[in-house]
Image (cartoon, rainbow, N blue to C red; front, side, top):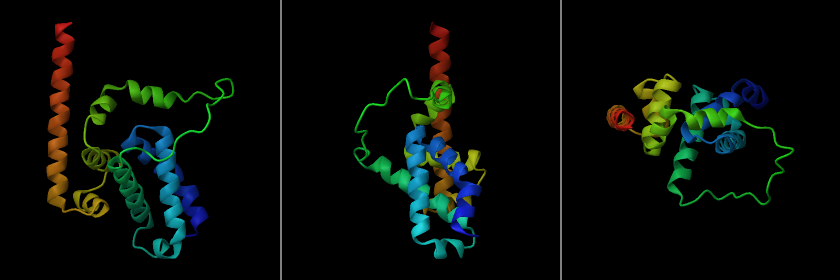
Length: 164
């Protein structure tokens, strides 16, 4: 498979994965672009891997986790966009208004990635462990803590709604 074919087939999927883990469409595009740029630099190695998409997905996840460890994201806008020329992106509004997204945003980056890879990407524990460079038992423990945290968040929201 040539790089251009890979980008056509999987590029939007990488953006969706980036959005699901980061909750920000611009950051998702950046994550996908960085992952594809790094894959392009060593495409011969990526293409010859057992699963090239697994390789690129791992690049994206590692970049997301690295971004969250930095104090601030290094890129900043240099000028304001003209609101008259901008096309509204309603997907971001929908995701930000969703209770589940707000609950996911309270999780650590690693917990969020584990849940996204498990339930959105439908990956098994071993594959998630390979992507994150950890043991499958760590994946299970992280998922368990994350789900417990989400249940706790749901209870808090439920109790808050009852009190109003």
